[in-house]
Image (cartoon, rainbow, N blue to C red; front, side, top):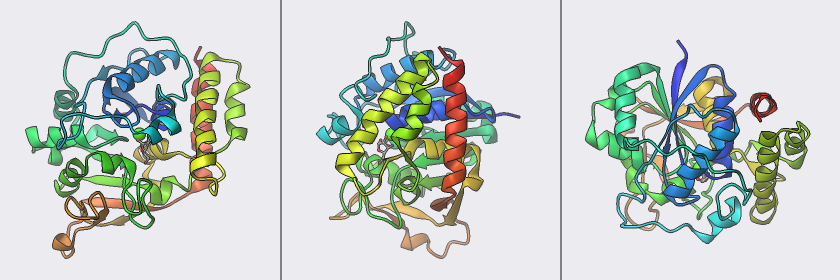
Length: 319
Ligand code: RIB
Ligand code: CA
C-alpha cells in the first residue's frame, strides 16, 4: 500500500522544495499539509502551501492551520535572519498567484490525530518547522505514539554545531519544550538534523535545469531557490551552495536507506544556558529500546540524484 504522508511546514524555500519532493514521489501520497510558524507567520505559510500545491498541479492537497506560536510564548514574530534567508514572503520574494482555496476548518492538531487513527502504521509524519503541532497532538491523544507509522523530523544537530548558535538548530530553537516532549514521548522518530542536511547542497547549476524546462513551476522553483542560494553565499560562504534541509527529511521518509542513523534516546535541553540543544538523554542511556534514530551520514550523490529527478519530473509536467 502506498504510504500516506503529512508534511508539517513553516513554508519557506526549503519547505517548498520538500512539498515538491513529496509530490514527485510515487511511493507516498501527500494527504495533507499542516501549517506551523517559523520562517514566516502561520498564515503566510498556509497561504504559500496552498499556492504552491496549486502551481505544482496538486490542488487536491488539503492544508490545515496549526498553532501560531510556541507552547511557552503568547505570540511569534519572524526573525530578521529568516526573512533574509527565505524572503519576506518566505518563498524568495517570488510572486505566485494566491490559491482560490481556503485552509480546511479542522485544526492541524485534530487532523494529525484523525490521520493516525485512519492510517495507523501506514502514516508518515514529517515536521520541518517547530514541533509545536505534533507535541500538542501527543498531549491530546497520547496513544498515537504507538499507532503512528513513523515521524521523520528536520531539526536538531548532534555531531555538529547549531545554526542559531553553537548548540541550537532553528526548528528546535522555536519551541524546545515541544521538541523535548516529542523526543521523550516514545514515538518512533528519526532526527534528520544539520549533521546531514548541511552535506546536501544545491547550486545555480541545478536550478538552471528547472528554468530551462520553460514551465511556470520550473521558473518558480528556480527563482525561489536562487534567492536562497544567494543568502547562503552571505551566511555560509564555505558551503558553496544551499542546504537541502527539509527535502532531505522527505527523502528519508520515502527511502530510509539514504542515511545511516544512530539509535539513541534523545532529549532537548529546556533549562539553563544550553536550552535548545539536542543530545542523548542520560536517564534513558541504558534503556534497551531506543525509540529515536539520529541521522549521522547521508549518501549525498544518491540523494541529489533522487532530488533532481523527482522535482524536475514534477516541474516539467506542471503548468
Ligand atoms: O535549520 C533549518 C530549518 O529551519 C529548515 O526547516 C528551515 O526551513 C527552517 O525552518
Ligand atoms: Ca522548514
